[in-house]
Image (tube, rainbow, N blue to C red; front, side, top):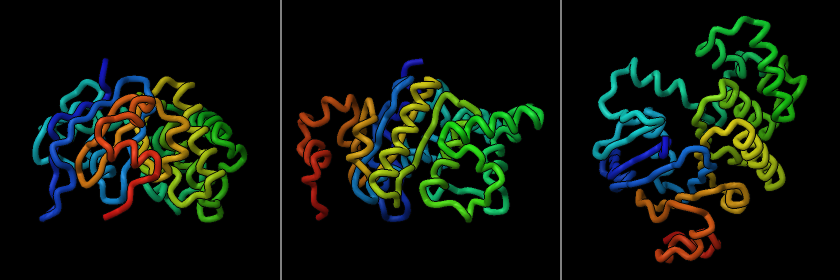
Length: 247
């Protein structure tokens, strides 16, 4: 397939604010790709465009080999059904149990019977260290546990592309590192392609194969992590080393 996500010259504006400025970006198949940058860099806008949730004003976007520009809702939904996504804030349904939350994609996207769904839910929860939590209420969970439930739900259908939008936001460093360890183990086990936004650069770079670095809607670098520290653009290495300061 080559690139699972490919953007060429993508631009998006919200009122007077330019969120993305002619962004060109690719995520190769089978990699763990990080996406970092300061606040308001355009990271969340970029992944929502990749997921078909926002339409760019200019440029082309290909996801899983399909040019999603101009697709109707039915065709776009077919592409979305192949993407697992963990949103900021986890987006758990508070009126469902943990198990029902994790089972939700299976009920929407598969023809599994209830026994198969139950078995898959228990396997996913055990995989993220929450075995026996199926009947728990989301409100009773810690922040780290809610993240793990979100990961279980995002990965249960085994889609070829998984997008994580700041999966460790608000977590302590030890919990954040464990979350990234789970994400990396899951990616290696399934072979899925992962795109992960994070504000926790130090944790992310321990697990990513490739990195993209944005600021104010501009893509400053995307490529192998090992080459980023020596990139010609001084912002790139400076940001990764924690030397960047907000203007």
